Image (tube, rainbow, N blue to C red):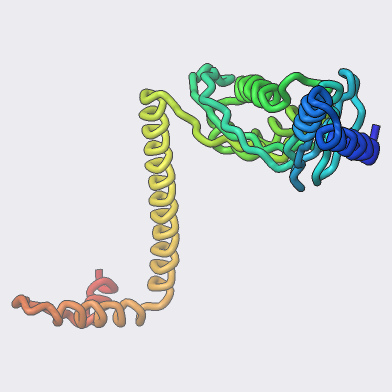
Length: 273
């Protein structure tokens, strides 16, 4: 059933109210007492539904319809009104002890964001939609985390949260509840596992540093090889290198004795031999 019109209730309300008021004013003692009781009873049926709420109305135990925001009146004893909040609600998932796929015990908690989309389903199809949503989210969280390894849990937290949300939302849709988001907050790991992860990370950093250092040495050796070939092909370059080395040595304040031999004499000696 759709939106319920409260016009009939208000007609009954004003009719009973004025009849009871006339009885109190003009009737005898019994009529005044009876009229006062009726006035108090009908006034107790006035309700206010806020803009962010919807009212699920029951008449003699049967679902009658939805009531929108505003001032309404329900017939005492005969009718019953259940209010449902349509705003987004957030509820914490308490820490859950889970064993991951690689047999690592962890504690995981989170938060679920949801809102009621169909108030009549939230009242008619489940006893307590809020508690049911949280309990089901806890179960799904344990099941999903139990199927992933620890590294995947730490690296793909958002993807796992979205997977949990889709599974929970598929079931809660029957309850008129729309799960907008599920977030994994804290992942508590045992201390020995933390130390093992730290050692693994340190070993990985050392491995990368060794690789970078070896790659630098290989690059330097290649450059030295190219320089040696260039100096061998150009003898004048050796002389320039010697002069550059002498210029660097001369800047040192320590005393030095440098003996220079002409390169031509060395070449003649090598040719005579």
